[in-house]
Image (cartoon, rainbow over all chains, first blue to last red; front, side, top):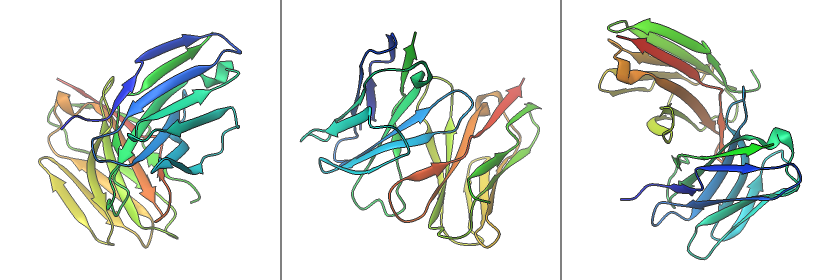
Length: 114
Length: 111
């Protein structure tokens, strides 16, 4: 069974640009979570999508947005990039019936903002 | 405790040493605790999901205990090997939405 995949592996942008990160969940999983790990911090929850809908978002500004497609893959968009957006972005997926919210993670996208 | 806290932040041991780390969390609204192992440049890998007070889980040389009343979990590694070098994350689940992660304990095992 293929795991969670993310693309690209690395992304370099300049301040003010937009970044798009992609995630493909494990086959059959309907929920996708996005996390940010900035330097010195733990994984911070960004967004949760389930069945195509945004279910919850963390304490991040509106320029962090995303969507989930009918095939359950997901996109994270970061507009008007700032230097402090440089971080590792992890995506995780969860299947229905995962009673304790067991999440399976991808390897991440390293975003560098210059 | 308001957040999930892990200690120590990092640990350097010799091959063959046994070691343990702590995860502290708010005991209110507790539903489950997750331990993950995260090797550099790889995906975090689930180790254990623990839910009941007094729970003890084991996977090879790694084991974990849970105390929900006082809000802590211990992760033990017996006879550490260089391949155990990784960051160990704990995360709590309150029954809704997402997981809340600690900052992790980075373990380095030298041969």
